[in-house]
Length: 337
Image 1: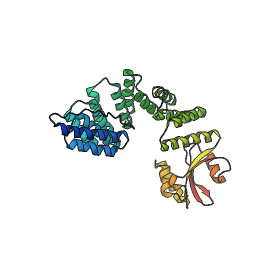
Image 2: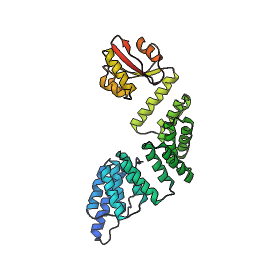
Image 3: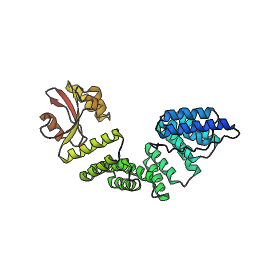
Image 4: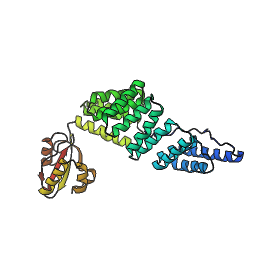
């Protein structure tokens, strides 16, 4: 997967055979300037400097690979792939470049192409645990769970300390509702990468699913302490509040408010056929919370209208109600916890 920060090497070696000394110094300055911008997270400016260097003759595989990584960081995946292909023509057999191309195609939702290029990396180094784990993730994305699990199991046979293999097996077992096995792999991931926010956040989620709420709170706290991104911290905080609300006996639900019973029954049928409740609420609900998918958050007994609370109490988690008539119209309700 794409790393959040590219490691910067200010002493990147250039293959500049036969270039005059002044021209070579100019190219080196462009590369150093680009690396400076990359180190500061200003990848678009880094791209400008590297493109200047490339136009002036700095066409080594090392330079092309760096530029390709910058393109991936700013979401210009097609340009990144083009540069990586040029790098492979310059220096064939670069396993890491095939893997990067796989990342680019995955990020741009071209799964078949992603699998093809990572399979090429696998062909070049058939016993590399990291390539097996990358392939495992791709086959998970392709809904080929058995193939994915076989690849991830092989990755751990080759290297039982491969963190990504544990991460993706945790994901596989989460999809399979095998909570204990998912928890075991995320525990190992947290041991291998003790500052990995995702490991602790997923451990919290899984313990919450298993109704081990005290453990879930502790893992959410650990994830919060490690997270620096404001959006990530906000999401963790909401999950933490949700677990605390469950422990306090509160309920959570969402609803769609319409004017007539036929409208409500039509929505119920659409939900039964697989349409997303939240998306339908955003489109059709006449309530003020339509833009958040009809979610009312957590509430305790007596906090909302009695008709609504009684309807929620009759539902199992995830179930959708029949038509519920209220003074302001007609509701369809889904219980969330």
